[in-house]
Image 1 (tube, rainbow, N blue to C red):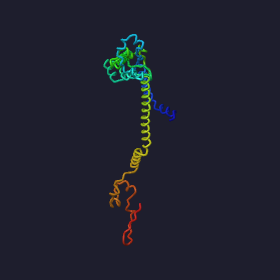
Image 2 (image 1 turned 90 degrees about the horizontal axis):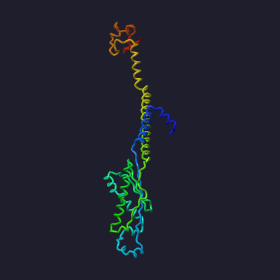
Image 3 (image 1 turned 60 degrees about the vertical axis):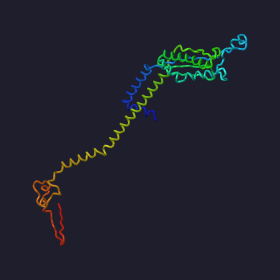
Image 4 (image 1 turned 120 degrees about the vertical axis):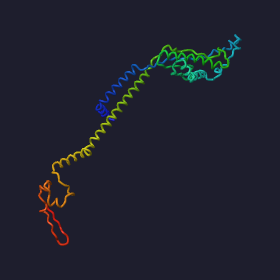
Length: 286
């Protein structure tokens, strides 16, 4: 598509393009300035290994031998299994239902970097305070889930993994990407509306052009022919009778009121009938 041709077409239909562009610009300014904001709060937790009593500690303090050390995650060959389980529980639908009951945001994500004991929690909301409160609620739920999945066999707290907050959700930052997405949607809609309006205008213009080009071969010619016939009727003197209604008396002795026969004289003098024997032959000359 030729850019110059596009610009010329848009300028040709400027009475349609300019209002659409003006409305699009106003909508873009409104969306960027007054549309709802989106704030995001983040927190990072580390899963800390339990402090298992050493042989020296057990010999020095025999009471440690009586403690329940049946933590199923201590027997796992993958030390990051506990972080995977906690992250899966936080991403469960029940977590979103609990947040909804508490009036918090359900737009949250729980991520875990590969092969690490870190869990990253983030929440987005139209309010800073709501985003921070959501992350804190998720952190509290993380600690409860971490304790519940390890103490299933009644293991002592000394043999449980614990959580350590690495980055606290002290503040929520505005997500400009949300405003940019809304702005892009408005601009794209304005461009589509502009080209759609121009296409409709061009279609109407083409229809009118075809109608004007087809007019001389159609109805206007018929009208002109009727006008010409009317003018010929006015110029020619009216006939007294139709030819189909003429009788021999009208031909031989035209009436005085018949202008045609009065002007050209009676035809009885120019009619001659010759009898050649079997059948009469009539010759008529005017």
